[in-house]
Length: 288
Length: 336
Image 1: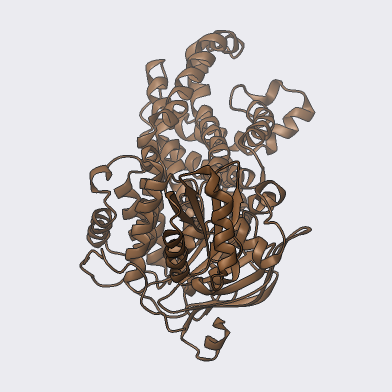
Image 2: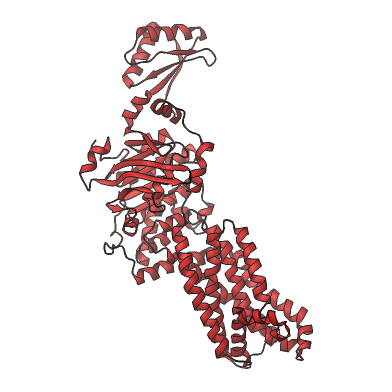
């Protein structure tokens, strides 16, 4: 019964034994600093994955270029003609709203990627390690915010090339980017939850698309809502994308009110995050 | 068997009492008791779908049991999961490393998640890469590793936190024999360092190579337990296969072995089709006796080999029923 010596003790490499991993109190609580360190390590992992697989950035880089060119040159003349300002006027109208659209599209892609990521064995390792399970999800949000910022930069670069003119409202631009990103981050939680709930990546994509289209087009992103029928206008008025677009437009173009749509954007962002993040984390915790 | 150790608290690194996990109708784990003494290797042997993976997933806090209790390193798997996670290492059936990250980045990440300072995490990663012979491929993405390299990286990742209990869930399933030997060598080293290991396997040979004590489970229940030689004795030890030079010697040879009534040796069976006489034996002495007898009678022998009982034979002997096979039961593990 006393078999403490293991077989095959030969061939032991005399590895130098450094200090053991730091142990915290027996409570098992994970402090804030440790949590930040874990989120950092996991964010680094997500960023390295992008580096290893640069194709995964393609959509983030190409989407703003294609959509800007499409809307400005295909629809711009016609729509701009209606608002008696021509294509240049429409460019200035469109670009601030497109930032919100980009945020939403990036967030949507998380859902599908998530679904695949969670099928991998490495998730078992994370879940069997002494880290808060939420840090895996938060790290995902951190990297998606980075991806969103890159997309917005590309969008603005293309925008300036095709004639966007913010007349020196750089602070306003920064504030608009900030608002859009905060809102985009709250959307990441929704799609993350979707990715955790649905069985396949295809299903996530299907659902996302159905949700995305009416939200994007039933908003003030592409056209002013005044020409829409009353029932639709009622929808666009409560659509958070309308608020984000209007806030950015106010901040970057100096047109329209800023305070009300900005406030609504913050309310939506905080509300969505407060509801979706805990649900997603609980879902992830229970996932086997 | 191991029950005797249950009283000395602190002696057992793993204590399992009446653990149950059902997936719908399927009783994946159906009341298991198990003790693993500190610094020993416990092999959990069973066919695909026996509940091995479910058991390991419960012990490593990935699954919550439906009933029963278990402690690992003194921590309750349900009430103290956070403390428990600090003391364990887990190498799953599917390589639990990030395939897009390089070997070094994988280990560095684990080090950081275990709260090592940056420099220390880098140093520890390099040490383990060296120890598991992965230094040359340290910068390559783990997804491009061969199967054996990936398992070694997986083992290295599990060792970063110096776990006091290591769970190895089928560490060599799907590997070719040469690669399997590489992984075994690493497991031997880990064990030699005094770690407690709970290893699951479908292979008798692997259990014998790595573990002193075995628990055989089937359909979520323990069907046999004990030290390897004891179990082997139960199963009937090894089978000796003798090929005479002359096909005509088959029957006389079998007759000679049977009539001689060697102690403990079961009847010898000649097989005309394969040209082999098979003799079940329990010990090396019996092997010597058989060979001695054949030499004394002057039978010319072309070939003589022994083989271990297969898992199927173990089950046949222990439970009196055929081992369940992959297709029948594998859905429950897939669900797990």
